Length: 119
Image 1 (spheres, one colour):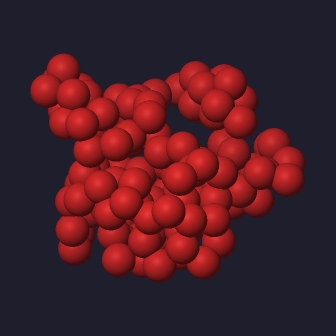
Image 2 (cartoon, rainbow, N blue to C red):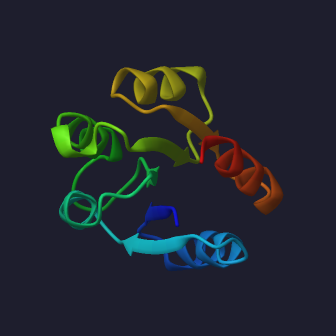
């Protein structure tokens, strides 16, 4: 069974993503900020992390860099989910180590399809 960690501080978006993913047989884990994301990822070793860039305590890009430095997470894929749709935001995410980038708003089916391809 695949594990997916959702890192999102907005409760409404967090709930939407969680409800979208719950139709699949994946274990869903949630973190509301960057520090919690790193701690949870190290403890749970998810297959995929859905990471918002705009977090209250530390930038999602910094979280991404931190996660990519962890040897125990080398097989974990990171997808940035963000309202920042500019090409520069995409490039920043990829430079930070993200494997995938999806701009908000996105359709639930688009998210499921992309995650299905990843996992």
